[in-house]
Amino acid sequence: MKVRIQANSIRVRLTQSEVRRIAGGSSVEQTTTFSPLAKLCSRVESSSQVEKPIATFENQYLTLSLPSNEARHWAESEEVGIETDQPVGDGTSLRIIIEKDFECLHPRGEEIADAFPRPVRAVDTEHR
Image (cartoon, rainbow, N blue to C red; front, side, top):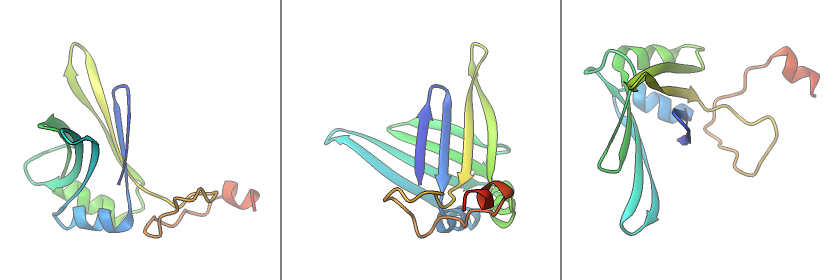
């Protein structure tokens, strides 16, 4: 799982096995430790209790919950991601983006064997 937070936007990229786990009703978690007393736990889960994707932050946990049926459909389709805006008050919203993690075009030393194969497009073939 890769988590990117920028201003009022949260973007998460998930590998093939992580997408399968979420579609199967499980969750995916990771922890970033800043010190012995400070950490950020990130979780993406499938939930029958939500009607649209939502983000919560409580007790050091950032949790992104996806509706179970939407998670299954996304996992089985060619769709790259799920996006939504979550109102947070004062006319402000939080942009939530959950995507499949694709192979990099150029090796960067962090290649993930479990990444989704990059779709072949006209742009890709021009660079070969």
